[in-house]
Image 1 (tube, rainbow, N blue to C red):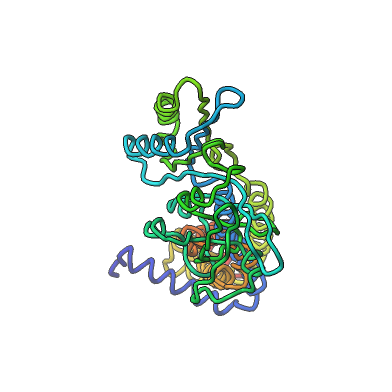
Image 2 (cartoon, rainbow, N blue to C red):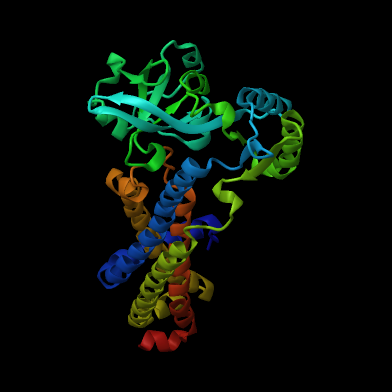
Length: 410
């Protein structure tokens, strides 16, 4: 008799295993449901965990900046001292050019008096450069962020929060709405964008470019008298090396009468996985469900093998080797759990990719939603296969331990 090739034997065993699963589908259905649910849970934990992690990361980056964000503070070294903001800005531009830092921005904080329909009110104002949006993931819900050409506007450009926009009557930004910035020389400013999560305050607030901020300054809020602050987004791998170099150059530019401090404010500077405990708990629950599904499948497989003793004896008497019988019984569980795993992964993809679920997990503030992770699907299928191997091991061992003559007489 011609000997089968290994590939043909494998295909035959898989076909036989699938046929047996279909024959005994009623017995294994409930157990496979448990495996499918467990695989869906494990896969969904990985997929939804990625979305939650991205949401937490983006939220942290909005406040502290992207890793690694170096903040440089220049302040007077003595009481009553004055910082020349424009000179420090030029010095920082030179530093960023010297060390090839692509994204950098000055950060000035202050207040500007704005004329609303209900009266004038002070508005917290942050003066930043164009790169600030990328560095802090500032999301603009309507309109647009600043561009370099906005520096040449006669009317300063503003990006405001929702409270500010509603205070001026929620106008269509395509009409280029303007507001008056009060002071010794009132200036008209144009609103070009709305940032839904800007500043995290329930009061009117706005962003301006440094040029517009300086042009609307008053004697009480002159940027030359404030602490100068700058930010640079650099690769985390070189952040520690750049800190002393940037500080040295800024100290040289500021002179001996100024104090220069530099520090990291991004979330990676503090270390730790903020979602670690949640992942462990949910992963543990999913693992427990998977274990219970495997245990149930083992019991069903053992009962099935007991009922097939005579069939196994006949096959052995016609020349089936112990290895072939072992492999066939083992593959029944593996094939069944892989099918259940595929179903679980499909359910997980439907859950993770659902817009409503994504919105709930990310709280609607995530810009770069990650795609469904392929590694999560692979993890689910590997877990399903592992369950199949474990669930089929004991029944396969029991099947080959039967004596042929006893099995035929059974």
